[in-house]
Image 1 (cartoon, rainbow, N blue to C red):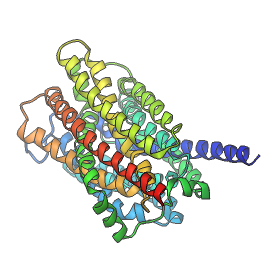
Image 2: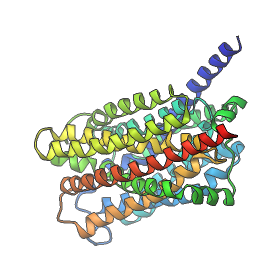
Image 3: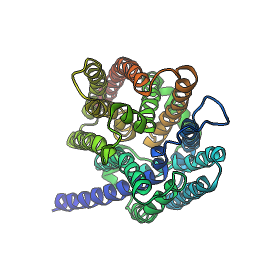
Image 4: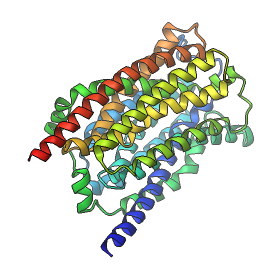
Length: 428
C-alpha cells in the first residue's frame, strides 16, 4: 500500500515538474533567440569589419556569460522562497531590453541586446533548483533539456512568421515574439513554485541539495579538479560550437540551399530533440548511480564519434546538407545535454558531495559562453575569408577529436573514483 502511494506521488511530481519546467524554459527562448533570424544585411558595427549581426550575437552572449558568472554564486546560494520572484523579475528585465532594442538606432541595439542576455542566463539555474535532488530528477531534467532542443527552432520560426506574414520589422520582431511567451512563462513559474520539497527518501538516494557557501564551492572544485577540468574544456568548445550553429543557422542553411524551406529550423531540431529525450529518459530506469554515470559518459563519447562520422559523410558527398545539420546537431547534443541534465546530478550522488548541480553547471556555462565569444570574434577578424560552412566543418573536426579524448579521460577518472567510494562504503 505504501509503495503504491509512493508511486502515485512520484508520478504526480514528475508530471507536474516536467511540464512546468518545459514550459518555463521553452518560453524563455522566446525572449532570447528570435533576433537571430534577422539578417541585418550590409550593416557593420561602428564601421569595422565586424558584421552588425555578429556584434549583436556576441553582445547577447557577453551578457549571458556574465549572467552565468553571477549565477555561480547567486543561483547556487539563493533561498528557495525567493526563486519565483527572481524568475519573474529576470524575464521582465529581458523583455524591457527587447523594447529598447526595437526603438534604438542600430549601434545602440548592441547595448540593448547585452542587457537582454544579462538576466536570461540565470533562468536555467533557478529552474533546476526546483528539480534537482529527487529520485525523479532525471525525467524532469530531461524534459527541461527537451525544451531548449526544440524551442530554439520553434521561436525562430515564430520570428520568421511575424516578419513574413505579419510584416513586423527586424527591430520589433524580437519584442513581439517575447509578448507571445510572457504569460506562459509566468504560469509555469507559479506551477514550479508550488512543487513540494524533496522527500526524505529523495535526500537519502540523491544527497541533500542546499545553497553552497564559498568554502564548499572551492572545496568541490579542488577535490574533483582532475576530472572536472577536461569536462569544462569540452563544454567550452561545445558551447561555442552550439552557439555558432544556432546563431548562423540561417546563413548556413542559405549556403546549403534550404533558406526557403518552411519551418526548416523545427524540422532539423525536432528529430534531434526526440532522440535525446528517449536516451535520457531511459537513464531513469537505471537506479544505480555509478552505473548511470558510466552510461552517461558512454553517451557523450558516442556523440563525439557521431560528430566526426557525420562530418566525414558530408564532405565525402554521401549525405545532404540537411542531414549533415541534423547529424552534427545530434552528436553535439548527445554531449551537451547531459551537462545540463543528468551528468552533475548523478556525479554528486555518486561522490556523496554536499553540493548543488547548479553550481557545477554554471561553472561550465560561464566558461562555455566565454569561449563562444572568442570563436565568433576569431571567425570575423582572423578567418573572415572562410565561408560559414567551411569554418564550421573545420570546427566540427576539432570538437570531435578533442571531445573524444577528454571525455574518455574524465569518464575513466570518475568511474575509478566511484569504485573507490563504493569499496569504502562496503568496508565501513
